[in-house]
Length: 566
Image 1 (cartoon, rainbow, N blue to C red):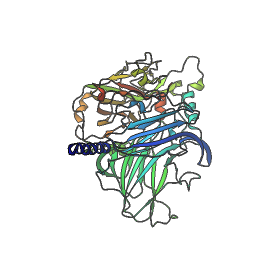
Image 2: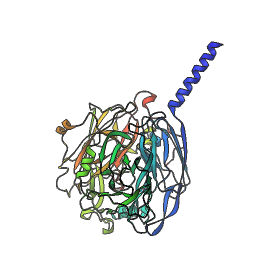
Image 3: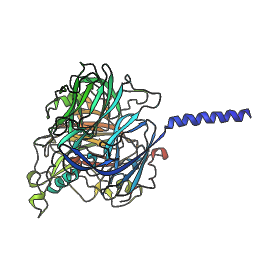
Image 4: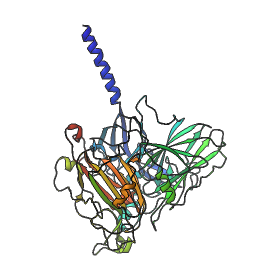
């Protein structure tokens, strides 16, 4: 009897321990719907989640399971991507349309069901089809496991700051017009912080986000750049910012007066209310590195307001770098170094099994025979395009992951080149005779499980050199090196293999290169693309298939029963 009771007690203790380790399940309901919103002296319909812009913030602890039922109540296809969530063995729930799933069609539902393991910090979620992420996005905040704190003092308050982009017109018509004419898109009318443009815009004196601060207290700002087509500079007037995290990875803290954050990236900052009580602008505007590129040159503001400050006192505006000043961008990114913790040690691959060299940049397609000038308003009478290794991505009509899992023929080919098809002076004078290849079948690269991969991303000047924020789904990677000009193998001697930053989105320097390393420990089909939305629409995308390893723990899980059909 005593032995039976002892075994029962041990079993209860083990079960409780396993329950704590496994985390809890957090349920959310997302309803995609259209509703009216008034901004900048005008009113329009937007598509959002639960009638919120930005959408609801998801909170969870590391190790929790997240279950989100998405119901589509608009006449457009929809998917949701959980940006930066690794989706270990659960690629079905990653979200990019026609890569890991077919879209959720109007009046249909799909439930995203995944566990977040070995990650903590600020990430985000967004629509991943067409340009719908303009208003369909929100924060995804992973708190440390219960009982574990931050590697810095606990802040007084944690505040998400989500940067978005606003058009007075219908954003879907903006991209439709651009793709129809072959030219560039109309620029946005404003940026917003937490959905509010701030008082520097017309009709917006009251449409401003205010963070009320207690003197002497420190605040954790969780920045998310959900803007479609622009990298941003950000600062708070008269206040020093301490960077402690980038893309949900702790970094060795450093102080700065200005932050640069690209679309897709997230960043955590500490700011202490240690100035004279008053009202201080939190401000952001564009960093645009391309030549002769039209962009939104307005400034979005929110207010960092001390408790004793009068609400009528004018806020102080911080100085921000000039829009095309690359020096502060380089200086800022060079300070990022990964901070190792017991829960998140540094594991940079020291050897390489697979070398990849990908050129990334804008391109041009010839005007089709017989086409009118109205459809060929890009450079040299052609149509704007973009490419990786001179191949413009072809979006399939069946999801790549489904075709891979079920061995469906004819959806993709496995001949994506691992180095440029044509070698040239990548960052030299612009070329007018190197058009991109746009085929009828999607090309993917196939990688084995467990390989150490080195990926060189090289900017090109075919149209113009430009900083490209490249996002890799399903993986974090170590940024072991960056530089300007053309990459060559001798530069590998300069790589940081000790404490490089670990990210999911990297701004490839304008006219330069970035070297990434990661291990292929997550089977599935994974998208890699520029997070400037127009560049993605033009085809600056690629896809990887990572094969299964050995046994169930290294293999993709079966698809869910309610996986949408194409």
